[in-house]
Length: 400
Image (tube, rainbow, N blue to C red; front, top):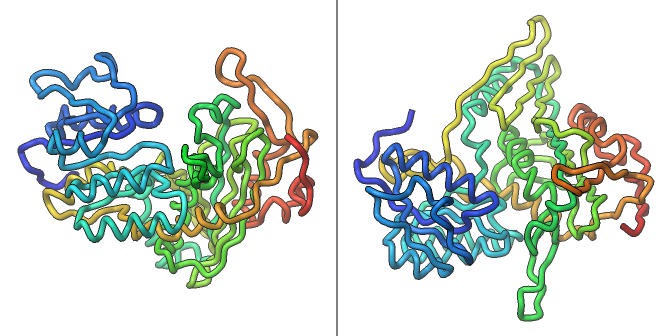
């Protein structure tokens, strides 16, 4: 249940209302109907049309539109800004809002480098505004019960945590925007700016952040070691099939295997290994399966707190933020490791095949056996090379 809130709707500006921004637009529509927010403005290069803004008309004030976030915030007097724009723009736009005293819901990843993340966190703190990072799974009500089961020894000694994400994306996905599938991008002045749009850092970033949250390793100083295996089947710069292995300061091993080249899309999950049982958490569904010695399997489905609602409750009733910048420091260590790693290894043609995508003429690439490898990684806390994937041998690379 949400905390009591002010009777006046909180004015919100949405920066980036297309692509994933449509999800935020629909969520704002829901909260506007509930009287919690009003959509004060939309920052887009091309204004939204009447159909896209359906549901935000009378009796509410008209929605202001423009391509200058600072001017839009000044004109509307918005109290909250949602930033859902290309990754390289996150820090500058967030600080544009923060300097005006506007609170933030910032999409993940919060920044393309650890230096930019530090600049963001420092600027937000200096401005004295609230900032929520858009890791929606951190709002799941399943997290604390899972932590309790581990703390109380229900699955014995904690042996490690593995996450698995097997998704399907066709080649058009990597052409959806100039920054898609890029590690770096020309910023228009001849300089290359970081993007880091890889499978671990953007589409399946929730698998990384959720696994770290369950390991109690959210802060920037909570990891003691980190190793990556980065590959790509598609003709892109960034990684589409990768593995990361982390050790926490408390000695917990955390692994994530992820791909956008699966044969079939599957629900991503985090697997908590214990000496006498295990817990599987399908974090998009808030679904938990507990399997332990001496007991039958127990499955539960939990609720979830929306991160924008949590931010509103923080502003109006003092609720604790679920995903402030400080809780994403360990995730940003992963982003930095991916950013600084050698370019992903291009898999040879014999390692993948093509198949029809989701649209007319769409094509996708499927890495042979990757679905089983991703699951086996979470089950064994082992990378692709350790699992015997021929294409993961060091030094193997081929032109795309």
